[in-house]
Amino acid sequence: MIALVLGGVLTLGAFFGAFFWAGVPDFGFVRTAEQVDSVRYKGPFEQPIDEARYLANYAGYTVEVETGGESVRGELVSADEDSVEVATDSGAVTIDAADFEAATVFGSEYGRPDWGQKIFYFHVPVAEISFIVFAFAAFYAVRFLMTRNREYDTKGRVSMEVTLVFVGLTMATGILWTKAAWGVWWDWEPRLTTYFILTLLVVAYFVLRNSVEDEERRAVYGAVFSILAFIDVPISFFITRLIPSNHPVIERGGLEGPMLISFIVAQIGMIALGYAIYQLRMGEVQLQERIEQAKTLLER
Amino acid sequence: MLRKDIVMELRTKEMIMSMGLYSLLTMVVYFVALSQAGSSFDPRDIAAGLLWLAFIFTSMLGLNRSLVHEKDQGCLEALLLSPVDRPVIFFAKAGGNLIFLLAVEALTLPVFGFLFLQGTELDWSSLALIPLALIAGSVGIAGVGTLLATMSVNTSGKDFVLAMLFIPLMYPLLLGAVTATGGAIVGGAQGVSVFWTGMAWVLGYDVIMLLASYGLYEFIVGA
Image 1 (tube, rainbow over the protein chains, first blue to last red):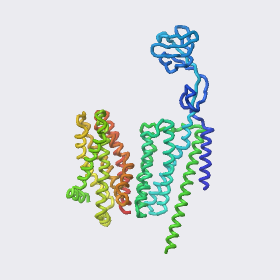
Image 2 (cartoon, helix red, strand yellow):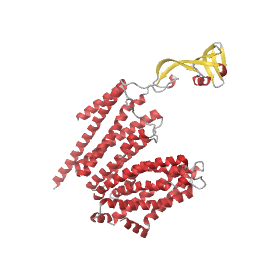
Image 3 (spheres, rainbow over the protein chains, first blue to last red):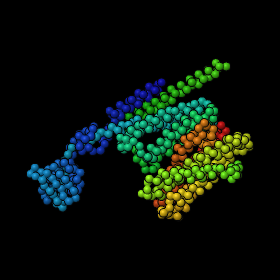
Image 4 (cartoon, chains in turn brown, purple):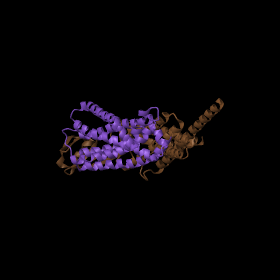
């Protein structure tokens, strides 16, 4: 219960930290502010241009073109490899690209705060916890096979249930983020693929358990399968560092100040939440077992 | 025990027949699946994927059958009573499955080439590498598959449970095997280097998974 409260408080705190304290990275460069929601005016900008064709992107901006010792100022109509057309106060001027010397573009710069990245403070801790709880499940599986103590089987099973919860959360938040950042709901990319396989393995664990009648056998099969399935965890974790992948990786020293603190708080909070879910479910399972025992005793 | 499996197979020819025919039927399904694509694609690019698709489904059929036999006739229990080391049982069963799988692959490969790769330019020197990929891939399939099939024969939904356990666990091996086979089919210096990258994945998987299966088989068979 303490873990649940602590986890809740810390995770909430991390969210507040993430949203109101940690900096929001600017997402690209927005030219036409009206077209995009949540844009921020960042101030005027002056962009020096050294070749005529680079002006092509700035149609509609105020430009100052240096040509043959004099400068022409006005609204840019069009520009390509051959010529530049500028609408000045005294009529349109066409400048041959051969006479083009330099130009400056004047405009306002808008940045779009990238709120989509905020899911990082939820998605990454949740994914980490799914790996950690899976590791506990595999550890209890080994312990069970060594000792044949049914207590370890129950612990392993409950750990696997918690893993399923966190794997589901990771998948859900990951899919939302992929849509926001990559523009697609799903991509067959190494990290996503291996994590999808991990999801299937966790589901397969429960399919296997539910289709075995004998209790002893169910426990052994479950333990053996969770050890085999655990091999996918290091693969999924390290694959983004081994082969080229679109999935971002946090580099050492990549997070600083408020971002790092929010991230750490989110991690601790999520660990506490995971532990709380595990303990609550464990209590429920133990209670069920005691009821079953009491029932069999009463029937005698 | 391996000899028993082979002798029984030679007598009934059941496994090879069923697996071979199954993989032939898969070829028919491939033809139907590709019938709308015309000739606008290079069949060499998808050949490796199609081949391993056939192998993976055929091997599941074979694995299921080989263990169902043991269970129906009570052989596994008899074996457990006999003074044989448990790992020996694993290697004998896996060896039998490996031999049948390789036999079916050897039959399927020319048929596949005959049906789908006619008229494409093939580099025979790199094609000679394909058997290596087939053997390395089949070792993994037979080893892990034997372990999983021993589990799944004792469950209520045999085939489905085997598929559910087998395919996700096979994913790294399949990816490596398809990469390697694809490299060998496309050929050239680049194809050969892709082949060895794929083979590194497959061999790494084989070593880790065979050790794990070998270690865990004792628990499964004793449960």
